[in-house]
Image (cartoon, rainbow over all chains, first blue to last red; front, side, top):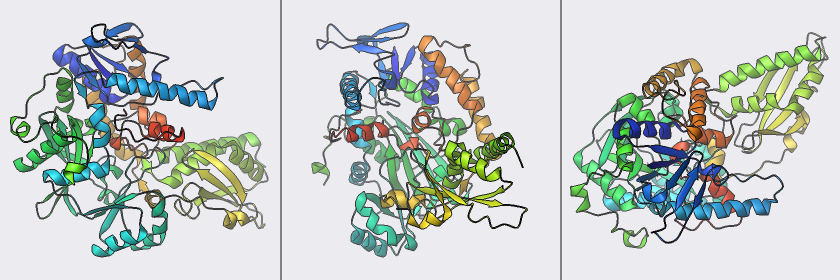
Length: 333
Length: 233
């Protein structure tokens, strides 16, 4: 049995569920963490021999029978607020969160390991790790200091972009050019850190999706001028399968190993000089928009990973294994 | 003079048109118009003015989302066949995009007295008005590809034909609905937008960068917990 944690109408989860059944004959069950514990629940026992049990409508899953766990979208538990004070609601959510995070961490063959995933998603950490493994990274400043930001702007002759560190649910916060007119607003940068990077002019935008030992690379070409910097602004860009040099593939695998990620959707830029620049790695990034247009079997690779049939990256494992790297900044500094 | 019902119908038509326009757009002004035209307070004020025989001429974004990022202002401007000064009729709806609600309705003259709510640079500047629009008609190719792909897996277009029992029936139904209902970029709730992921970022939810649960992190922080532990889901 495979368990996928996501919203019930998550298309990615449904596609992988279908792949599992069609290609491996494996049953996959989607549970929504937002529905825990009022629509499904867990009995956890500390002694491994006694096991734990996931109970969902029409199904009881002993945790020992969970071959793979995909933490596709872990939505917050929803607690009915009727007749409960806000403090009690918050407490219930915290308790549910605390238990779920601990329980999910006990499952083997998890995509991605939640212990690694959270830190790996942090932009500052992944940028440092990317540079450490040898990937080219745009000159970057993450700061709240207006003077430092202004100096960075001047250093690059104003050819600078900026973006947020975390997603927003209420507005689109695209990557933008740091226009001179924006400098008057720099004082507001003291409220929250911002990522500033030298602008890399793209010959191609690249999306590399890593699933264990598989890497699927596609070029993303926006058709609209306003999306030339951030292709997400074009809902229908041209997406084509492409290849990248072996040494870059090797570096991306090294990056994922160092971050402890079995799955990552990595954004890169190829400039006119033929240099590949790492922009960011999304541990929960989407892949179907690539698969649908390129035919790359990414969902099958995810399904295969969840069944525990992991291929071995022999060349990479000799370089660094996921278990060897401690997720701390010290050794990387 | 038009009746209240006639005006409501006219406003419903306008709302439908603006909503259609907002699908596929990452345009704060358009989305703010949808929110405003759904608001009962705005509707009441519009009906009151239009029932005097005045026509709604335009809805114009004012300073632009960014000068006061949580407070997107729309000016409602009217016209009339009669030779009367309608400037006093103009009003401003202050739309709070994060909560998808109208925060205040103000007379035009008070516009300058609004107190901007500060927002950090990384949020405020990208909020400066830019019209990123992709007409729905131009999304049909993408929708067709998605439909064909999912249909080949018996997902979305064939509810009940594949093995989905109990808990997952709802998932397929939702998926089917999803395919038939293009998403608005902002008028859907953030949770629904997050949950109802299509295959591609639709803009607002920015699902692409999912750190498992950004809203959850916010909630935890609001509970005065420090999100310093790295083993969170």
